[in-house]
Image (tube, rainbow, N blue to C red; front, side, top):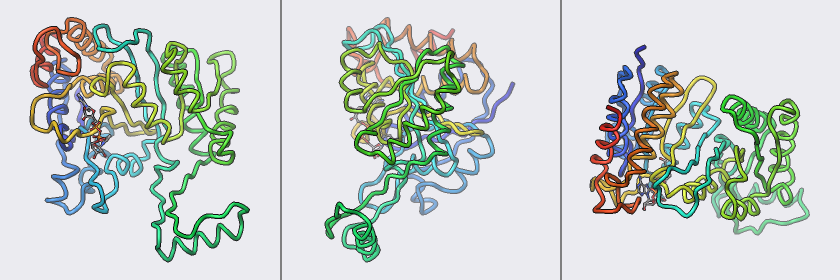
Length: 357
Ligand code: NAD
């Protein structure tokens, strides 16, 4: 079956890793017509915005996209394009498997867990009030009138909304994912002891949803600071983690560290109808154009995409090819500490393609 997929190269190292992944996906033999659109720095020049409507339209039409990371310019007034895409298309679930591959440079062997991060709310909602602004002062006065604890007048404010709707939806996604992928346990991660009305609500929604899956999927919960300690001590105790947006972001990088670094951590942003696949890592601008960084995270995001498209055989072949290249440790990038000299992004992708043949 032929598929049309939106392709977004991204910024920094984005075009290198995204094109490497595209070549590997094509080499599986799956019939994909790529529709390339630009977002990020290149789009600002042409469209005056890093997230042009044309790019969103392409994703809406094709329902599936793969993207390289996109830089969030600091202090330019542009919000994150990555967050913008997730919010505009209601890609409420961020799925990030963290799995050990033999040969990866890490002290951990027994890691095979999946992060399910809520993607639309929390401190990532982008509802912020700048220090000194008239509206901010009004808001502070209003809150101080209703709260025993007072906010200092020279504060900036970021709002942390957590709703029943989004919390139930992400908990259901986590349990359905566990059932469909033969996972045994879902752990809800929170800081409900401190943030009773936001994280507390997230936890109580997860508990309610867990009841619907009783006898099929186990459920427990963990406070995020304690979870961090447990993860670095015994990651094998975890299976599926469901988290609010910000903890999901941070714990994703922690788990990437457990399996050998950001170069190997894939991801997907999934909504009811649309899915966008991308590595966990960012655009690493300092490595841009050097043919140096690891393409594995984006190639594995491509394998997740193939599964999503129903191309299971190709997805498994691609993952196996990546796994062989990592195990052999001959044609791998600098971050995998190869036995000999490291190869570049293109050469590692080439080795994956050779193992697909
Ligand atoms: P980053 O993930 O880009 O890079 C941090 C470090 O991780 C790099 O310096 C490098 O040492 C390592 N690294 C990252 N990707 C690698 C790879 N493929 N192979 C080997 N090593 C790799 O994080 P950052 O420097 O904090 O962010 C840079 C930019 O990316 C920022 O503008 C940020 O907003 C953006 N960002 C985008 C996304 C996304 O597009 N989804 C995600 C995170 C950050």
